[in-house]
Length: 408
Image (cartoon, rainbow, N blue to C red; front, side, top):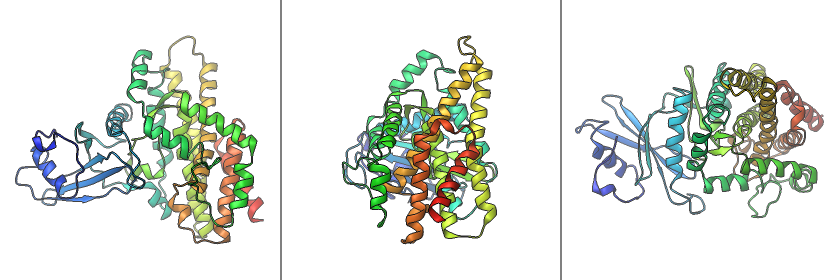
């Protein structure tokens, strides 16, 4: 859907009216006389997202446009992030077909990404908050991660092509955001942006700010994030970036993509499931079946990714130097990273500036303070003892131990 019109020779921000002119100028996806409607549907901080549709035919598409600044703070950002997102979505569709939105066109000048409308799928975070069970979720997201992440690593991708991709996916501004919000500020609030629940200030100081052992391990994870160009990551793979229905998943919003440690993506998915579990326990929904499903899903995310990674590498990695023993060790290091990264994701969402709805919507009071302490203590153990977890059930057991120690 390429737009050839001099009005779009220079970048400017679209709105619900001008985006319709932009789509009509393409004269390809919709007929010239189509009666179109548009609505801004984005709720993020760094892009504008519009859904455009024709009621008569049901045809629709989505346009995601990058701005030069963050909506919240006005901080300058590179416009290249939408190019990175477009290129990664194409790669992901190659390795995991059907699990991401189809890309129709990327407009370099307008920094506008034109893609498939996935309105028939639903935001996983919001679905889980309603107590919805998706039995195939762990199977599908681990399929996606194993295929995409390992296929873009040196073990399965031609080493020259991989190095070219490392260069193409350098993402300075968005990596800088992660390095601060995830790996620095929750332990060293040098920008004064942390938001701590009232009554937990002394607890956070003791357990996070003053724990030198924890900070040493976070420093190791931070160094890996910044320097281990292992595979092409989504970079922000949480439950709000996964859309789902009974037919499968669609992974969206990879504007944070770059070459980094595989465990970061895997750990983000695992870490966010603990928010679902914690939220339902505090709210006492009475749905024991759902909580057991979440616990099983957390365990399955770890176990199935580990098994699929070993199987995929064993089948497709043919360099004799990469023995079965090496491949098993390689995946073991990924899983250790994943546990540690799950910990950093949990902590940054509790004390950092960017919260999650599951915890933020709990009514202020002792219940909220207590569950946040449970999550922080669990995450701290994940980070400090990440090599000790070899099965997914151990992650759930750790959370339960911390819950008993706080709630008993």
